[in-house]
Amino acid sequence: MSSHQEPVVLGKIGASHGIKGWLKITSYTDSVEDIFSYSPWLVKEQGEWREVKVEQWRFQGKALIAELEGITTRDQAQMLTNCEIAIPAELMKELPEDEFYWRDLIGCDVVNTKGYNMGKVEQIVETGSNDVLLVKANAKDGFGKTERMIPFVTEQFVLEVNLTEKQILVDWDPDF
Image (tube, rainbow, N blue to C red):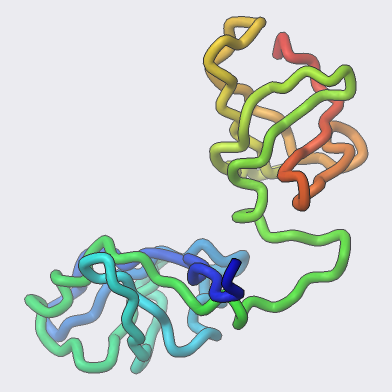
């Protein structure tokens, strides 16, 4: 297995903004502006990653907008709409033992203390009080569920996250 990892997606390019080629940016980083602390970005165009540099960025109300190097017209900007923004995996900061990135939880199996497999994490939903694991139930779920929402509260509901085995141990009733 090669050590070359897929780039880590940190956001997405949205619609063009104005006529000078600025673009709206959707950021998946904890603080949305953190996406700008990485440079250069990798942008996927027609299935190929290429490097782009951010010339400048700012908040436009609550939205983020950025000017990318070499993109000076609305037409050029529209070519990039909906492209993913990523960085090389090796640029991601290594986290301490008991921490992880939300993206690492996607696709993990969720199993409760009685060994019942509740499905796989499809996404993490941020709510006001705590984050919630959106778990897509297995095809033949014994409780007739298609999905479950499990609050990501460690020690109360989420007992263990094992990224090596891609498994999350929860104290949660499969009926919920």
